Length: 231
Length: 82
Image: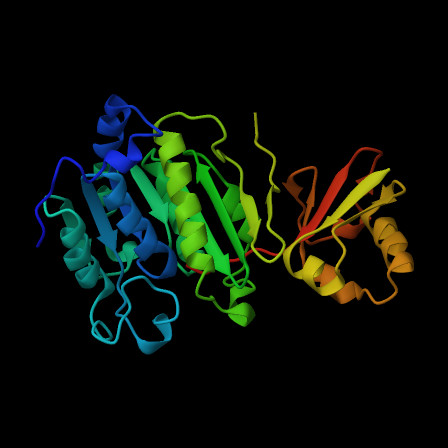
């Protein structure tokens, strides 16, 4: 394990003051889903300087993850993603506080949502996305939504009370990712857009995609909010 | 006029980003769109998610929704992968 240094976050201080960084760093974030999106989001949160993460994923790495998931390697196939993330994030910041769970989020005590400041939706199951939106409302926490499929993605920060995901997905259980899969680059791009929204939301910067969903099209480089914010 | 925007799969398939059409209903908007682009298939639009001015329309009778000058219609698809 490495040794944390005072310099390791200085690259972030060009876009925020030391006081803002300090405030951001004390966010406790729940990342649900540690695949294509979640692996990049969790690593990014650690590299931003967030001190405390709760990581949830029931799944293990397999060969089909190698094309896109940050910590999927031939050495990690068969290992729980949460277990691998624990080891890798400790290499980034040895002092980071990590709580990991190798079960479905629906099987955890919902009190877990009360112990975090923000919930990250990085799961690949639409019913679970709806569950997270409901839990975010019940436990009065913001939800950072992300989703990918083919060239396309979605992002948005949803306030408690949001019904945007329920409205968008309606009764569907899967989207066009079923046919388009998930190529190497889309989860990484969308995950890092989610990280930008995390920073903007926590630091109250303008331009955050708040209570809206932005559709991301990497084929045409079209980034467009399609939902209207309720006022 | 009504602005009809195609995103994601529909834009890729038909190489059309947007068209301005006369007001009427969603169905009338599609009729005008298909007249300009004869290769477009109605079933692709029936499978899409439809937003009018940022509000998603339920599937039932959505093509009968009235559109007015200045309205913006988006046909797209959602993704759910992680």
